[in-house]
Image 1 (cartoon, rainbow, N blue to C red):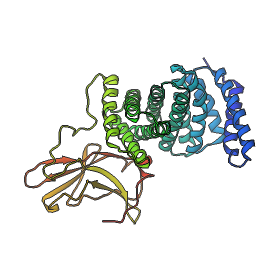
Image 2: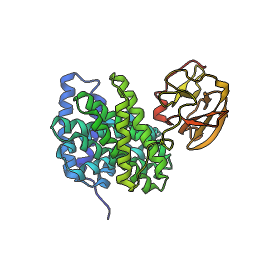
Image 3: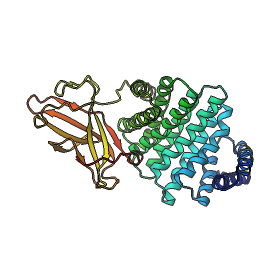
Image 4: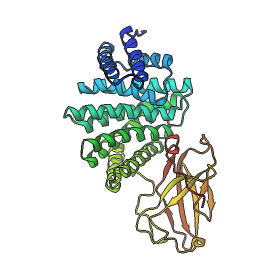
Length: 385
């Protein structure tokens, strides 16, 4: 049966976009009045639309087709749509808005030339930030609300990636990054228990990734790993900005990942394939090395091995191997691997550097990282080694 979208809903969403565009150029009082009127209209429109994700998706899609927003504009639309429904604390409605807005944004991004991976990150961030802020202000369970919205949003992102022939791993990584960034910012602002929040949110994100992967028919474990990496990348960035220790939060994310995979698949899993007590004796390391990305002075993206200090006594005694998505692609006597100047399907993926002792054959795998459009935007520039 064909669904009809109330004209009032479409009109209100158009008003939303206009208010977003005009707010920066209007006097403060006028902009505030526009926002107040917009909130009233969007509330009425969402009440009329009900909790049907198909109807919400169609309405938002029509709006975006007319206004052609950037990824940042899509985030603003997601924030406004979620802001009101989050106050109702109705799980079905929260999920419907999350799914509808995500699918509309992904479709519009593909159709209009906006980077769909960036759109996935932006919309997920917008939905979660409004959900967690609204629940926090009202004294509700902001962690549970944020986890529910993240689960629905990430699931929709991954399944939509399959529909549009996009990388499910990149989509999961981006959506998880955006969702965790939003929740971290809110929890820091409100002085909340970050460890509990990270555990709950990572669990919800992981359940969403598995759900979306199952719908798309893609590898569940690989896609879930990419989502987990996105949460950890976000944690490191937000913790650094707030002068917080990332270690306890990363450990909380690991617990959340294990919980989410158990709930979604019924299986006990580990966040990383090499988690079984790696032997660090070959390098004398006290902490695990990490696979990281930098951009050299020539603009080339490189994969580096990051360690706590220079603890390789004799570089000539080890071999470095670069793996992408679990497949060996290059060996070298150097721990620096070039991936070119362009980000495309040939070089995005999950990267991991292994260090092999030539004498003993012992192997140590660095913590993997995902090379995606979202991560590429934040890769630091470093002088070529």
